Image 1 (tube, rainbow, N blue to C red):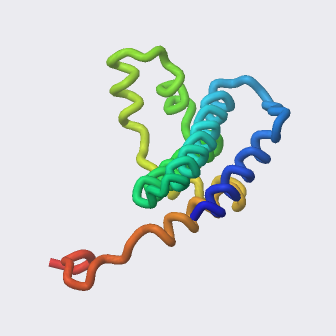
Image 2: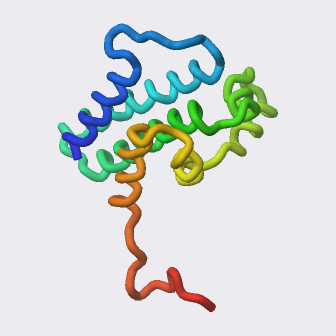
Length: 146
């Protein structure tokens, strides 16, 4: 788990231009994507701190946050509408908060970016989802009709 988190953080760091960040523009979309990617890096750092304690349950939660924030960054760059971007960069007030709360959840974002963004941009997030979404318990009603 720790190795994958480090690999993910290294990939994000490389995609952001390494130590010399070079944005292709300063549009709201680019900036909000950058902030989401930086949040993913912060979650990865927190994951390693938590696992050093060791606190594995908290570490797994941090790993999910790391992947979800990276999924959000990719979605913001490739799939979010201009209106959705505007919701995120609007001055924070009750109306902006309500509008931002209508943004899709991580799974919907992942569904929307598949096919719209470069394969490498979604490969880790789809793998994380495939590995970490548990199968229904045999005794549950999940997947049954009726």
